[in-house]
Image (tube, rainbow, N blue to C red):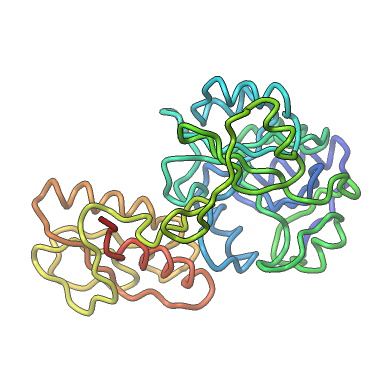
Amino acid sequence: MTQRLVADRAGITRAADILRTGGLVAFGTETVYGLGADATNAVAVARIFAAKERPTFNPLISHFPDAAAAFVHAMADGRAHRLAHRFWPGPLTMVLPRAAGCAISDLAGAGLPSVAVRVPDSDTARALLAAAGVPVAAPSANPSGGVSPSRAEHVLDGLEGKIDAILDSGPCAVGVESTIVDLTGTHPVLLRPGGITIEALREVCPDITTPHDTSDARPVAPGRLSSHYAPTLPVRLDAQTVAPDEALLAFGAELPGSPLTWNLSQGEKLEEAAARLFAGLRFLDMEGRRRGLRAIAVQPVPTHGLGAAIGDRLSRAACPRPR
């Protein structure tokens, strides 16, 4: 049963408590309703993908009450500060390099060295974010592939019983998603049009560009490269045996023979496996290379539910690297 909370002090406090304890809370912003979870809690983030039945671990936008809180986790240069001064709070998301002290989980960032951050222009949303005291990852609060919700009723139509609560702040004012700008390169790149126009962005960043090539070779959004998420060691999928010079990424009962193992979930729980995936690949790669191992063998993972997303990322990790 999904709690429907009134957007008053008591409702905001209750919603913040749910977020801090690993729950899912839908909340309104000026754009659409987002499905929020503690971005530092990988298990909570995995619940977002499960509730939405989201097919891949796309990077999620982390929301903050103000720019100062956002820039604790993201490395902001002059361009970022100028955009924040002009457009925050507001429907602008910036993709920035991770800061050294970034606590946002690998799963929320899809294993990338960047994070997507935003300060919404909603008093209720910012009050919730301040009360929660953690970065809140929040894609649109609808089943994957569905229409983004601009009212609480829209959220309940698709997610009733799948999330812990909804903080009902009424209809959203903008009704379209935030504009996304990538600031990880030399020139700003518009990844997604939204509530802030490119004309307005050019007043702050005259050199902003739009991608000319939308193929996987030059992705318009983080995570589309076929060989993304790849460790240095080669990855071998659907392993039925493991060699003595291979590390093992296990799921459930572990194959014998590996000197180094990371188990995604001994209990074969897909949410736990999703939460542990990126950390496991990173650990096996670093420790495996230190020990002189030649590859990472991966046990089969079921393909239903979150297993499809796990399989997508493992396939990208195993893909031959482009020259």
